[in-house]
Image (cartoon, rainbow, N blue to C red; front, side, top):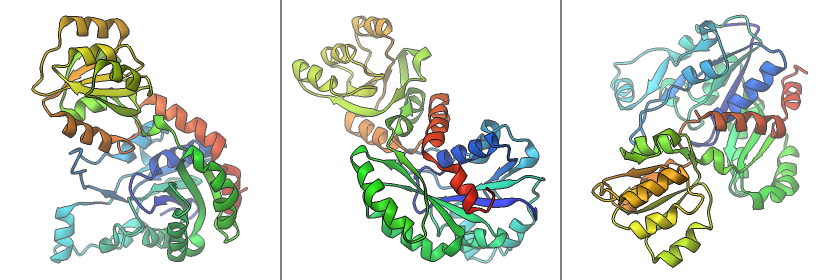
Length: 358
């Protein structure tokens, strides 16, 4: 373990809080200021989402490519938690000293080692690899990322402070609804600052970051692409269901932008109405019915992908809704937005001062 590098863990109290996005923003900030960094994730979660059915993503490999790190600046997980590794630990088959393994990780001559935490402060406790234990092992500072929905998030922050003590050097409030921004700035932020809990970032809600690409939708739904294969990079930010009269559907569809419109494969009237909006995807449900040529021809003209699934409308919508805010950030459009947002809403100079590196 390097004795000169400063360790910084980006953690959270619950899944899908925005850790990866925040780590990317911080890392790019630090690189732009001339700091050399390494990245890693000592503990990774191997639990698949039961709804999405997708395997966990290797965030370390992604960060390596995105931040242009050499292989010696990358630390792969020493353990992936899943049912099998937990069983072995419980039955005494696994007696490894994982904290010792952490101290033996090779680190190059860098200024910062950035680690991404797992889904909570507690995950990994069975292996002595919870976030507080990791921080103690390598004397790391911690930045906590929390998805903000209401002032009640303060209780989670205070509980985390009790667990982490002085290691908690900064808070990033993420995905703040527009109607809560004033509350955050006038009430929440001053309250936390007065209790020695620096808020180094307050990031507004972004429909783009919570959105999913049409390509991801196709993969998760096991859909057939009927047209628009060259437009699967479009981002879907919300869902609309077409199950009403045409006149009502037109008014309804016009209320949203960049949506995925889900309707029955036998509703050609609704399908044509959907193609006259700013939708980014038309999803036809039920037994993979082929729409009329009129629909597909119009879809080609307006460049809206049309996909077909065997599932019914309700199941399709449930899966889609589960995807929002849960798919890994990979699209360049999202990455560019993350870097821009970080430059505007994360106080990197203040973080450096809190780390005594200003």
